[in-house]
Image 1 (cartoon, helix red, strand yellow):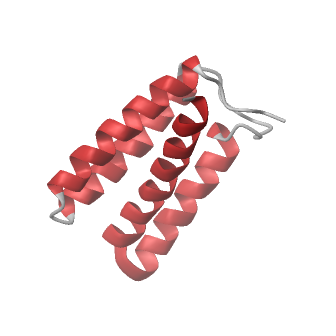
Image 2 (image 1 turned 180 degrees about the vertical axis):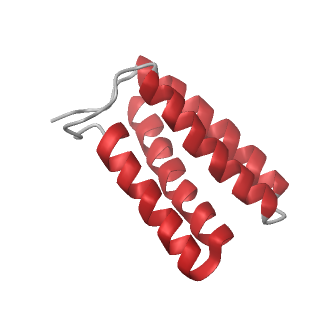
Length: 103
């Protein structure tokens, strides 16, 4: 179950980048996607040297996933937005129960 949650979490991270790049289209999208990857890698990723402690990390994750959900809605994809939002929130909560490996 833990491995499935980590796989779903990774899928949500990738989907968040896709949502912002798709919404922003070419240059703005690439900049938004790169910013999201940089923020995630710097403050949320399990191997980050500057990883935020909870609850700050949890709030930042929810903000990122909320922006991605809003991007899907703005793209006219409300069903995709709803499915993504549920998956993202569930995996963000479960990763606190089953922590990510920090090797």
